[in-house]
Length: 127
Length: 133
Image 1 (cartoon, each protein chain N blue to C red):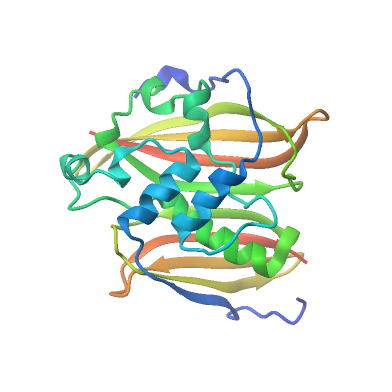
Image 2: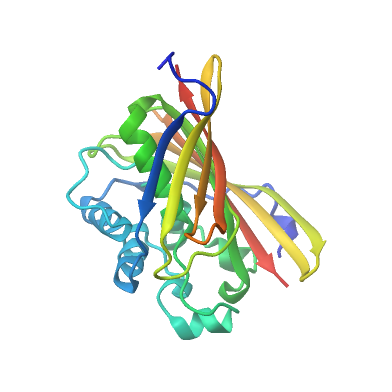
């Protein structure tokens, strides 16, 4: 990995929009009781047009891709959710090298096809 | 938000990786197949809610007013399928600020996952919750 340079793209992956069934499965798998992910009427009472995809699903996408690439060298992941993701919203998940030193620092972004950023973050990879 | 709860430490609870829950997580992510290893974010704050750590109730965050601002994970040691993990939870920081949409409250809650019986630190998770006014 010493060949990595700032600006290198680690991955740039498309994730198709998640169906209601998938949102329900992810809630069940994470033991998340929040109806905002499965109940449109509840989501609308909370001020949203439709049910929300779970923020932790975005975190899980990043973690899975990074773990597949780096294994146990993945040391940390820090994700800030910046805009809601609704049922059916596709995402583009990108990781780029920000710096290479004692560790490798990655900059992470998730965005909808229209360019709306839905999450940003950072990961640290051991050398 | 119940600001006086800053610093509160909950009684620990225990977890074991559950392959059926992992299968649902993966299917929810749109990933086929089964996991060889316990997924990195299997250990998540949400599992505490039925195990004595009901942050939304304790911090007075009605679901309709709740947002999830982010998550931080640090990994220190791998957790195997047969491992049992002790989870300690601390309400690390509570704060508030004014925004254009009204007052917002923030809660940073830290979860430490330690492999038993040696209590080896495996994962630290910080989840950031927001209450809208």
